[in-house]
Image 1 (tube, rainbow, N blue to C red):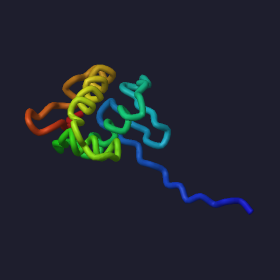
Image 2 (cartoon, rainbow, N blue to C red):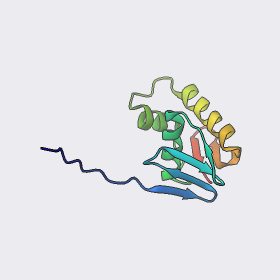
Image 3 (cartoon, rainbow, N blue to C red):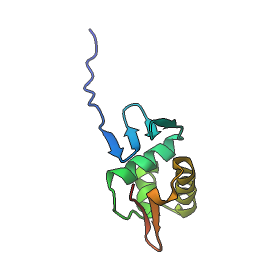
Image 4 (cartoon, rainbow, N blue to C red):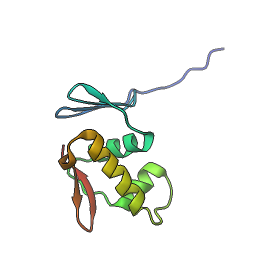
Length: 105
């Protein structure tokens, strides 16, 4: 007897020229595909789901890594730096000093 799976399609996130297909784990910027590591992809998805919201490094770490955020700032910082470099637009993800990061697209 075949197993039935209940799979729901994840929404595609569109922010200007940035397209994130969560189901296919694909990111395109102005139609050009951008290769991201899994954690980079997860952090980007998290930030774009809450545009304008300031998320602390601890919130980002706990949501993406599913672990307690002990000394996580450098890990999140490195992922944010890589995302900014790959997206070729450092202003897309802004730093809010003393608070965290926000996606402004």
